Image 1: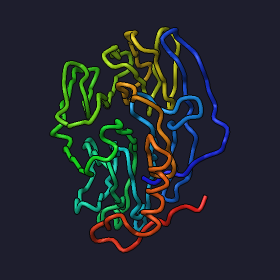
Image 2 (image 1 turned 180 degrees about the horizontal axis):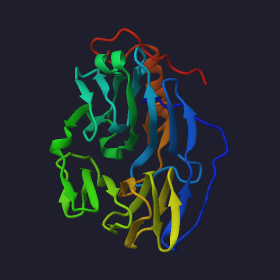
Image 3 (image 1 turned 90 degrees about the vertical axis):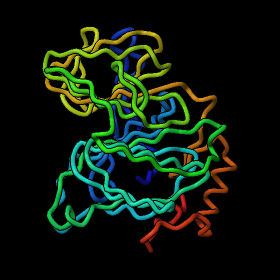
Image 4 (image 1 turned 135 degrees about the vertical axis):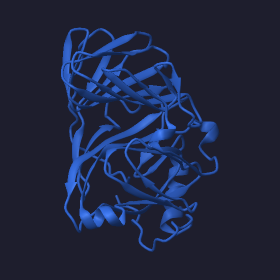
Length: 305
């Protein structure tokens, strides 16, 4: 996904239970094919663990004959995670990977020193129409790995651990939660879990990770007697065990991890601990020095602002 900066004021619902540091209300953005709700980056909270970008895509109904077309664009210094609840997206990148992203799958593209990719509707869904709904997030890389070789991991829904009983279903996308651990390899300590709760069910957000948040995409939940409706990002202080209760059937992402060793600059699709490195990436894309996406001739030009 390609990011455009915003200068709009950002609302802050602040404080509920003692363990809750901040409530972020996402800003709506029209990216052409559909609307996204952007929770990170946020004026008063740039990251949660290494998570530096979080968009809810849709839900959006795309008519037959239409589709999503995010042309090739570059990234450095981050890993992208595309996770779908509904629909399909065709991923192509400059390493030669071509992968159809389906609901419940984990696609982790590590940009490192530089990669380009495109995201488009597959041919069948473009012909017949589809509902697109999911979460796009970026994870900033530790300084030691910012210039690592680019790579791509794909795990189908069946390859990720599921923890469930009659009232809860959780898919551990990365890291560890609910006694299960994902096989996805990460370059820092972070976690990402898709959690669905029936009305009245509870789930723990354990203090195993330094920084933690819950992005509520559907339903309504209660924490320490206070209620929250979708769509909100709840950011918690370190150290407290949190119990989440679903007031209505709810779906949410548990996320977070260890804080990085320092702040990150973000400009367009580039993330780095060095402003100079971002300037270099700008020039590299402007001059066509990134490797090309296999099978693509289009590209998104470098923004002038």
